[in-house]
Image (cartoon, rainbow, N blue to C red; front, side, top):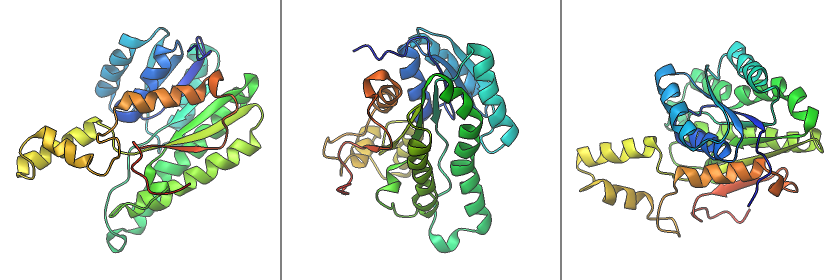
Length: 262
């Protein structure tokens, strides 16, 4: 299927690893020119090289901190400078610290809001004129926690809801020129899950990596965790002409693990 986005330009934040990197790779494989982003320059450049292996367009690495307003402005400016346009904005960010409510400080709350919400606010504000110019897309990568609260993740459960409210608002205010959608990932075999499983194996919780990964998948109807590229391909679809009537939705990508009807 031709996604019709060959030659477009995209900025994908927090894409030096994990699901952001997978989204960048899927877009690059469709011929999109992509700016990838992360704070660690060495890891970012390694990720850019990985994405270039599947790319049919250009891939540019731009380091920056999502909580720094100057850095988010520079990310958008770099994309337009490199490619002459910005057609697709894909926002991703690392998760806030885990923990129960009474152990969560005011500083934790403000830091989580700055990372998860204000980064998207600033990026969209800077990107809006470019996205509107020729018609573009916004895709926010959030979490299944916006559908169902997850134990000990009070910050993610609470703060990520704001991103969904923003995405829905943008889908109305920016239409028809710009479509805005969200994806809600469940467990995927990213480096983070690999690290957690390996730590559990070292503690003696599991006999080996495979049994640990199987435990992560125990409540998933498809009986496995997702592969990052499976989420990346959905992001690319939402950026594409093939999804031209999809706007203002939040799509769980969790193998059917969610119990919510909506």
